[in-house]
Amino acid sequence: FRDVRKVLFIASGFLSSHVVNKAFIEKLETVLKKNVSVNLIFSDLRSHSDWMKTGYTAALGSLTTLSKIYPNLELIQKHTHQKGIVVDQQYAIVGSFNFLSNSNVARDESSIKIYESKAIAKLSREFLIR
Image (cartoon, rainbow, N blue to C red; front, side, top):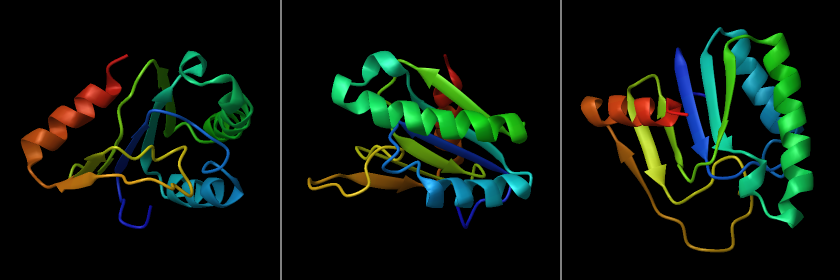
């Protein structure tokens, strides 16, 4: 959250209250108060296993409440496996990590940071396809 000034995209295959917790909401709200446009893209309920649904529901409730206060927060739920972050169209991070659901991952994950503007623009557009 600290680098973003204008627009932030976070795409995650899953959503969980293990990550979208009080500390996450406070950091997100700080960014939203600066009038940053935030797009959170994540799988809808059908993509979450039964054991994940409680955490998904809690996280979604917190984010929905925040989106009613801040119109610059857009929640995009779709059947997706996308994983990545785009910060101000300046750089993107893409990889295997679920940014909105993994807090203490006990497995290997891989990511790459991209600075190429055409690739970043294409990734941003793909995140927004519903």
